[in-house]
Length: 109
Image (cartoon, rainbow, N blue to C red; front, side, top):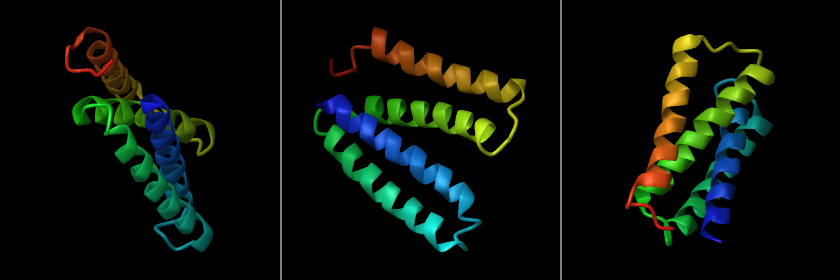
């Protein structure tokens, strides 16, 4: 259940970030509302995950997966580009999350 809460937090954070892009600096009402509601829901589920997963581990997973999926969404839907340094940086973040989850004693498995 703890990873379901974390997954839901990640999904709603991604939705919020994506709609923030379409809100045009919070000047469009519907995307602004979706952004705010998504972030509130995301933080609720993140707080539930934190009952079971240490903050550093949960935040690394939340941030890492959020960055990767949001970057993919920015390329696919918003036609933005990622250069080699951006892809390398994102890859290093993913590698860090994987290393932490599989090799660290800090994780709550």
